[in-house]
Image 1 (cartoon, rainbow, N blue to C red):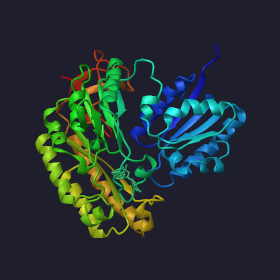
Image 2: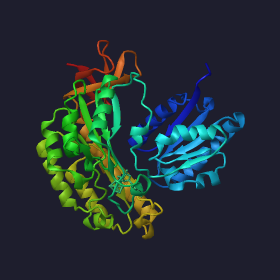
Image 3: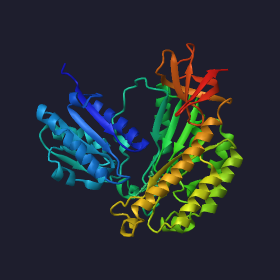
Image 4: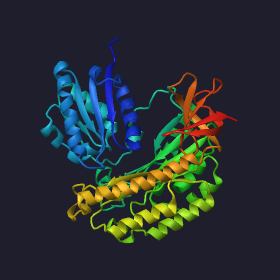
Length: 439
Ligand code: 5AD
Ligand code: SF4
């Protein structure tokens, strides 16, 4: 039998790209590829790219430049670019980097095996369509191999919100939900392979409105159905928009024990003026009310957010409104970014805030957020948590997993195994993780 060909995939950006990379390696698995962790050994290199922030395309070009040497050493090596930079740049990638053989956008991964075959015959392949069919349904089924205890599952893709700064509606396309039956069967399959925690993914996951047995299902209904799966212990979802948080989903945080008490709910800014300019379609107060309702349903809910500072037109007062909102909410975790213009988005036409001003604001915001994050982590000491053990730790016998609140927790106990959900008491709060001992 011929040696299997080797595939090296490098993934940038969000969890959806991580999920897509897994699907792409499965698809190419059916074409005789096994994955390798070393680009030097590869017969095919795929960069699964992200376009969310500045200079994404430039970074991809410089990364590609580094593969020149490998291509010189192995003329059979094929190089592909996937993901959102592929969608945004299309054929331009091949013009600027002629050694690229294949360009595939996020909605056409199911065509990858055919594209690979074409590329092997010396053709070049570019596909950045937004086809009608569900790409996941057309991907070759993965063999039932065992896997780790956690998995991502994409339920929704794309976005119709058109926040003024964001490329997602252009690169991932319009909002589409996968049908309920396909999600349930994928979840059953994951559980049969040992998965105990599933994170439902979507750029706007709580806008989910998939075709169900009796009409359109909401995300809450989907979560409640998934929760009936024996063997599945935990459900998470990300990323949500405040305006799509319906009553049932809020309540589910209180009455669905498998739904974990962690919610990523980006607000981007605490200033109504800036929220309006961003086309977010909600005010700071509406967001705060929503947080209050969520905390009424689930008092220990750990909140996570995304923030942009230096959005065009942001004054010192606007920025201070963001700090006030952060103080009012108290985040356990957050991501914050300096605004960067994305070509093709409405905000890119507007005059930006001076870079040194934006940097200084980012610094102040991050100082506040990291204080909050630290306080939330430190407050876990002495508490009892459930930890899903995901992998071995660095020390012998040690294991690492995540608590309900998504904190990383270390434990040293010979009787515990990967995949177990251990009841632990937190004994220590370190720089990036907690330590616990069995109760
Ligand atoms: N500039 C800075 N940050 C951005 N994000 C999205 N687009 C931009 C941009 N143009 C951030 C938002 C979003 C997160 C995924 O990335 O905060 O929620
Ligand atoms: Fe981008 Fe999220 Fe706004 Fe959609 S809701 S445009 S993905 S920031």
